[in-house]
Image 1 (cartoon, one colour):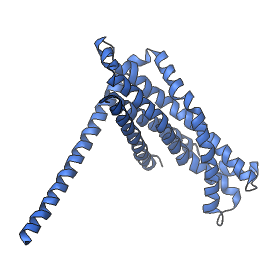
Image 2: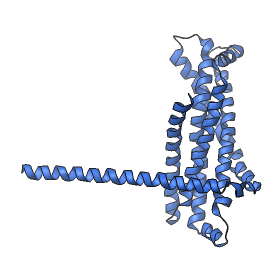
Image 3: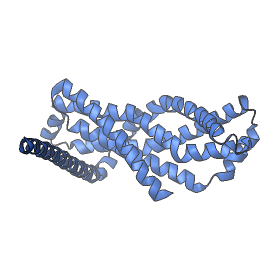
Image 4: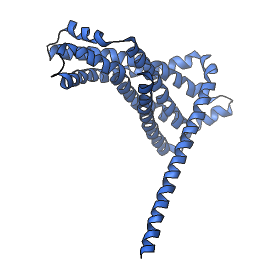
Length: 268
């Protein structure tokens, strides 16, 4: 009986080791595949920049059309930031320093990260669904048959547009979040306009703005990379497009959070 139990235990451990090894191998293969895909995108940059109309079209679609949802989100980010800073430091720090806390939080973390997560739900899903539909309906294969590089005409313009427009959207979001926090501070907490922005200027550094824009640029890159990668490799018809779109959104969100952790350790 003891030997049988031991054999069963060893069998479970063997299965666990095999499962872990298989997952680790798949993760390494996925990272390598995404790396190769990104390198192909980079090689297509020169040809894409010779077709500026492709870039401007994607900037309109991915950037300008995302402004309403980004601005709506930033209003609530600023309002909640004001309440949270007051709740955390209200008994220890004078209310005149509310702007300093809100400014730091919005510029370095809340602004770029929450904006990226909101954009992921729109841009990441859109890219994966759009490219995935083109892939499963063989439109991408038709381009290849016509000697047209899909990376030049489809993928790289979307990557460049996202890298450019996400920092722009983040700038708008941060500015409106600060204004929203100031309105809440003045109307609800009785903090004057001058006192709030004096607090913002108190701890503001140029480095904060640089960190915000660098994060936004990296987030724009990883969001579009995930959307393009999973969309380009979609298969299995309409059901497959839905599954790959879900994978793209999840992967983009995870990549945003992981890259944010890396950037915090590098930039701060």
